[in-house]
Amino acid sequence: MLDDADEDETRMTLRVPYISDDAIERDAEALLVQYAHARAVEMKAPIPIEDIVEKHLKLRVEFDNLHRLLNVPRSGIGLDPDIFGAIWLDTGRIVIDESLDPEERPAMEGRYRFTLAHEGGGHWRLHRGLARADRDQEALFADVPKPTVVCRSSQARERVEWQADFYASCLLMPRRLVHAEWLDRLGRTKPLLLSDLRPNEKVMSRAGALIHEQRRGEVEAVDDALFESVAEPIARRFGVSRAAMRIRLEKLGLLLRAEPKQQSLKGVL
Image (cartoon, rainbow, N blue to C red; front, side, top):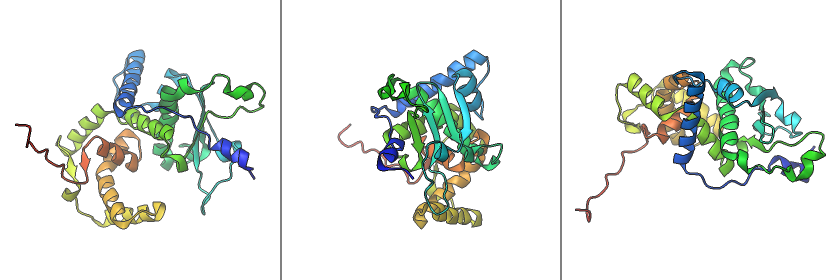
């Protein structure tokens, strides 16, 4: 059982400055260009995230039971893991929770790939320079140095985690490739409105699962399920989850929940 001091340590995150969405997207695109040039390959989906992280960025990736490794009890009725990844920015070590091992649990491959991009892309590229070199002197004497960032699903809204999440989405789902896939599959470049879609049995079943898993409102769950029915085949192509692709498509303005408001020209002419 953790005492209060130990629990505070597991909740420690880097204090990071504001970084614009455009800046994050540009860096993810630059990383893909660097990798493609170094390997003399053309970037296609699915993005080879393992090769980028381990061979191009030279980071060490391993699986372990992170709750046991960090001495953090699992929480929740089902005792699902709250910690999916951790990174030591001073050494380039990444540990991903064993529950995401795609060889043991193939259904978790999308979540695994996103977590790897979150750690090895987002935190490494955006936050490495913020890690203190001396690590408060404790790393000189500790038997097991603590990770710089412990990524908990319960802290996903914190700035450091949101930035790494957005970086991962840009890295795994590059704007240019997503737009090309959208055109290829839907035969259109314009966005799809929520009002263009109608619930069917599969959508309602998925909505029920979302309500059960995340306790979200019924209307919101149905809307998400409708969009995820569109996102699903594109998600498979990119090796990510339906939810991750749905969020990316919305961010790119390809899935819209409402008709965009027309800007008034009054006072402009």
